[in-house]
Length: 485
Image (cartoon, rainbow, N blue to C red):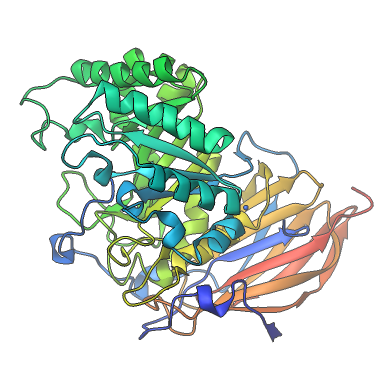
């Protein structure tokens, strides 16, 4: 097999000391074509993080995974994988000061860049400056992305909101995907921005006043909200607020590095984190569907409050990310914007793109590689998959070109031989194997090697591929469409 990088070395995070290894397999039968916000990081010892043990990572050494031929209701739309930056990344110099950011975004996009987070409501409401908006526009033009901007309704000013709407529309034009008012409004009273006992109805009324001001200033701007910190708050917000927005938004983190009142899984690996994510997003999905609105996770990542060192910034996150993306798209969300801070105050642990201390170029962290795997599946309708286990996950996609893309996510601690049965396929397949010799806690050094997988005809238009997955690895496989299909 021949080693080849998916990104130029200058855009990759430097390798650091390691621990054990990990896998996410993406198998594609077609040409590859894509509950809190990030507060300042709290001490990691506020949350007991149990590293995976050998006993917890046991899976069959050999199994058969079969892809169904009839699509489910799940869809992978164009631009499903976006990014979310805290507003303070704009700073005084703006995003254009971040060299390396545009090519990294372009590799994932085009998609949505959400600007918001906790820093959007610090102090008093101040308008975006011309420098900030023009620098953002430079990044959007260069990457082909669009942006959602956030107004501060915790310290709201009608004049600032109107000024921002007019200025953003004038500078960004069609690259302005929408505007939101507020960030995790359920936290306003605990933060001292509203009186104790402030109700959901009062909070929603404040948001709607802000959104109406945006609409009055520039009626063509699409409104989004409520940027809730938890899915259940969306359920309570929806009767008043859902009809006022084009897109319902909420945040989702299966883990946290800060004190939180809800139960958390001990690790990203295995089914626990996925169960937490699905349970949290379910009320928001139900509310959005009832209002006939799409649901966007405009802020998400592995662990709230900046991430967990050795997990959010490590190869473990690269394995978790593609399974997380496909699981939530299957559940019904239309997109996921992964949060971080690429060029403000160094690297947050969970940021897909960051600017290391002393560096002059933004670089990709391991979670970014996992997002690339999901992105490279392409777009289309999700297919049913059978034969998986708790530690060998699989997702399949019927693309618009008629080819099938399969993501196999192996979280076991030993090699697994997968007999992958795929309809509407034929012949051999090109593969790209993802590994990191440094292991689960490695914070750089992801390797991609290319090779070929032979296929065996299993009947009319169906092919079986023998995929050999090393312990904790990932594989991209591309096959031809069967002429019988």
